[in-house]
Length: 173
Image (cartoon, rainbow, N blue to C red; front, side):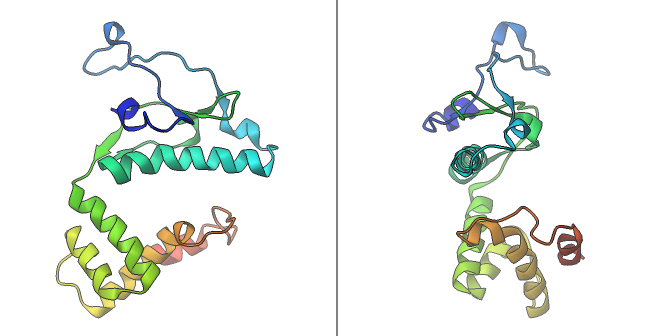
């Protein structure tokens, strides 16, 4: 599935299944050469940007175009090739979403970007939120603004600009 979904992404690679060594509960895949992404801490900004774009596409192309996410996206499930392409690994945990859910994710992005409260409410309803009132929408929008923040601002950004987990915890509470 991932090989098909990412076939058009020349900088993202997915190992091929080895059917004769796989079962219903165990998938065996070909070996792809690569090194751990954390070994590239000293990479140039240009190299880091390329890696980030590859990882972004490895996650969002399957989700936005097919409604599928890799459910275990920790750094150990990515490897970096010598040419700085990304290998995506470990497909034991994926999730498939209905198109209406994915549409809600995209609609919420646009709602936040445009300040369109009605579109945000429509997105929340598409996910199953009902009995929405102004207070609930305000809280959901605060949560959404926190989660979507890195996608809404075209600038270099640290994963956690507050350098602690407090901001995320505050928003979640």
